[in-house]
Length: 94
Image (cartoon, rainbow, N blue to C red; front, side):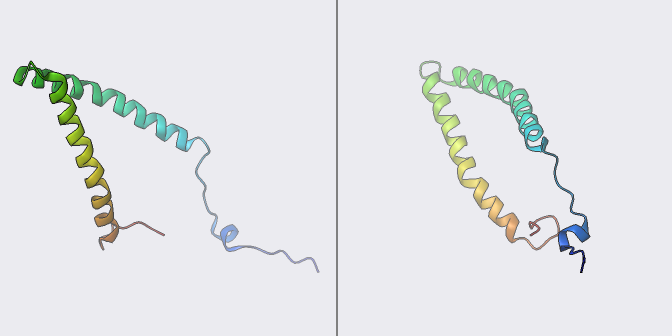
């Protein structure tokens, strides 16, 4: 009575992510943002200083807050739209 029991996962040969993948992905994102954001923030500050030198801090805060709020609203909406899309590239696999 020595039967081997196989599970569906064992038969399909499921490949797992390496343990270091989330760390590498996080480091790549950090590097990308560290490279792209400083030039944008510096040029934004210089442009606002040219437009309103007396209230440059307030202007920069308002512009950055408006952008952050826009992203806060747009990301879930676009994600929801992407999940509801019937095209091959739009929906998530379950």
